[in-house]
Length: 220
Image 1: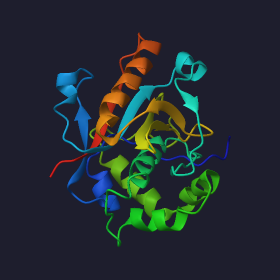
Image 2: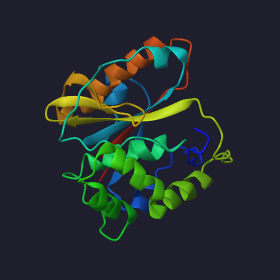
Image 3: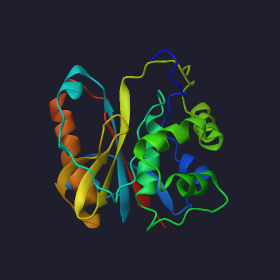
Image 4: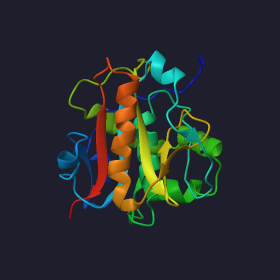
């Protein structure tokens, strides 16, 4: 839509979640491969996994998993162009508030408190006007390793989050109408189960190389 709000595309930035109020012992760490020995190098426990994948004709036409509502999941629609990085982080953090003690005086704790009882659409509307979250996103985008593109830039990659909730693996993507269910899961198997789904994403687009996996891990 012509009047859609746009944010500057976000690069991976480990300081972003700490600026939002996540304690230092929780960090996003790179997953260097999908084989068991490389997955074993990732610090545990893992609370969420974020996948960056290319948007292609195949990814748009073929859905992996099935849409499934779960009232215990915190889900937010993405209505801001190029905000998928922040939406993925919101999904990763908000669905782990039982594990992570957010700092009360920082952006995310306040955002979560205000939006907890809202619908996915209402949360999206709130995010559009939340100046603290918007400023945190823009500040992080400007601190990226490469020069930030303009907010109107069309980006062909997309971030989504994976979490374990109520014994199931769920993919949270603000572009979808509901979470995507990928089968049974436990907190201990979250990383391995997500790696299997990531392989399916890669097999769907075998000519594409731009895939990145990051785990939200407790490192201390």
